[in-house]
Amino acid sequence: MVTKHGALTENIALLSLCGTTLEPLMDYTLPVDPPGAIHHHLSLQHEQQVAEAFAILLANTDDPNAVGAICVEEQPNATGLLIRMAVNSGSQQERTSTFDRIICALKRLTASKDEETFFKEIVVACQSRLLVRLRSSHAKSHRRHKVGRQAVISRLCDGIKVISRLRINPAATAAIKPHTDLLECAFAKLEAMSFTAAHSESGSQSLYCIISKVEMLLTSTDIVALLMLIPNDIPTWPESAVRSLVKSLNGLAQYRSAAHYLLRRAHKDPIFHHLKIAEISSETYPEGLGTWEPLSVQHGIFTRSLQGYDKSVQRSEISSQLKSMLGMSHSELESSIDCHATMTKRVHAEIQLLLYSMKHPPLLQPRIICSNKHACLLCALFIQAHGKFHIRSCHGRLYPRWRIPLPQIMTLPESSRLQIQQAVDDLNQFLEAKLRTYLLRSRSRYTFSSVGSTVT
Image (cartoon, rainbow, N blue to C red; front, side, top):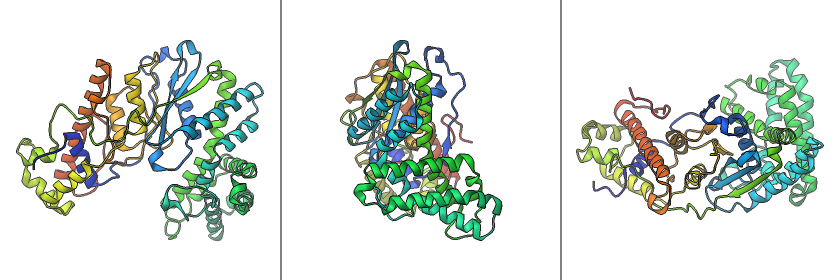
């Protein structure tokens, strides 16, 4: 095969043929006392909480092409915070408007600590997104597979009915049922509205009531533990369905948590009195074909094995493994790799923030990059390889339409360029180690370990 692609491009394409979910969901723990923390006003933990709060509140769509991420830049001498945001693609105008409304409300209500009024403002600012999270019939969803799915509150009430019918912990069920009955009535009132009303003040009032009741249900009852008692042999209630429902309920309650945290911090810490937002334009890192490639190798593992460059991988071994696991001949595999590699690719929001900080280093470097969703596998691995930022979690899925812009189109300080190049080389070496493990030693799904681990 005469390769048309660099090593990282080819290896990502090959991995995408092996499967897209390559690692289980992972939550990362922040270091307790990272080097350089004394220069920041915010602790690393508070920086993460601020980032998470705004990542939640600024997530205005469920469009998978418009996933956003933010980082928090401290201004010199603790004079304020700059929330820098990026999205995979598309405009950020609505996110900016949401931020402006929330910050105006925060400034107005900090002195009085009026959390209820502040939360109501957040509900209004995030109204469309909350309808989507509830799976309301009034939601404007960008995901076709979610259209028609049972509403979250209806699903919750059905779960309680199953528990009640099976007489699972009757005392706990009796204590929870009044809460779910009130939720059911409040949601029915929302659904009975017209589409226009649901997106107006009447709708926001209903949403405020529903989200408040969900948060109270989670904090004052054992609803999660009770739901986990639903037997797995009920066809409509597999364990994954229960976990999905719990995740949806927590996703609704987090708006109240974000409101509580921001108002409390703004009352205690003057740095929150000066909050600004800045966006990275999607035109800065447009879609394209090429990606930043490693310097340590020119070709991917498949090309090197076929051409005899890589003696550690024998052609016969790769051929037998690919034939049995992928059901492809060499020519079919080459064609598939070429198809994956020539798709236009996006610079994910997390990578945009990292690159921007490397190109325009602020006096105090952000330490947290936070998305409104779990980071994808390649973002997580690259950020870990780079070593200057932390993320909160990774969903373990690989997206072949992922890239880092070509170095020749970016103007970077030499030190930043070298750091990124090293991270690209490390990422590629890690992916190749896992490809070898997958192709030569495993006949089943494999998992990734952390960056830098040794393959045994």
